[in-house]
Image (cartoon, rainbow, N blue to C red; front, side, top):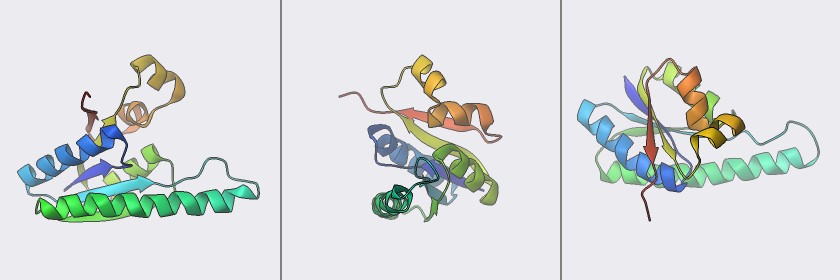
Length: 139
């Protein structure tokens, strides 16, 4: 089994990284750090450039998360997936026998998340794996 983390360096994701490392260490399981890199839209001349920019950002973000996991002594792997975040995390949980999916939340009201389709909201309704939603630290 493994712990699946959705990571994008948002305030909620930074705290979720620490929590996911704690959970992985407690269970003695590897951490799979996932970045859903699907660019919005699927057509147009700008899509390729946008897609490449999103993938480059994801590579940088994942590198930071791996360094933090390494410092904590938790083995990790990364997945830069060309899907929207919720689908990327659900797929990773299936491929890696996920025990739990960990995601951060930040400042979005439950109603706004439901109306706009936030990643945590989608996961809570679509995932067959338990989802741990970690709020961002208060400033």
